[in-house]
Every structure is written in structure tokens, then in C-alpha cells.
Image (tube, rainbow, N blue to C red; front, top):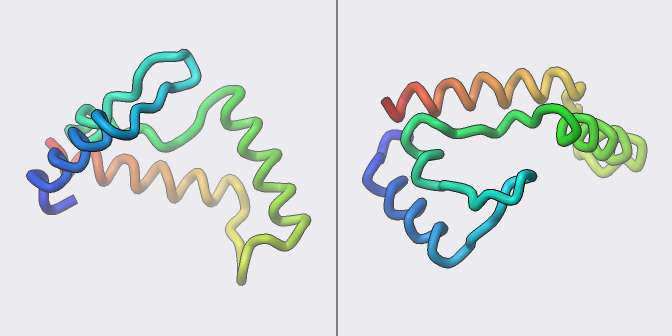
Length: 89
């Protein structure tokens, strides 16, 4: 978060060599993600699917140690998302 120049270089590199699309089929803008528009908290169907997958991982004891409850994990992600986005301004 502290080195904005490195974040920009990584984002541009990823945009050229690791192109990904979001759930709507739009190319992910990694540069935007490093300039205050990072989005790591899932919504809607993605949140439901992730909750199901997370529950399965807990049931299969894939998680090591004391795993967070799903809502706690999303809360931590939301805090991180806000902190990273604020630092980018």
C-alpha cells in the first residue's frame, strides 16, 4: 500500500500478461484497483457461491487453525478493501 509506484507497475504488468474478466465478462482494470477502486468483497451470487465453498472447506477441515466465521472473514476483507482504497487517494 505504501509504494504506489510499485503498485502501478504491477497493475500494468498484470493487465498485459494476466488478463482476467469479471463475472459480467468485462476485463478487470488492475490499474483502477490500485488507485482507489479495489473490490475484494463479493456480492450477490458470488457471495452465495463463496459462502458455500467456504462452508465446504470448513466441513472438510481444509482450514488450518481457528478459521473465521464467513461473516467475520467478509468483514475483515471489507476493512482491508477500505484501507487500501483510502491509501490510494
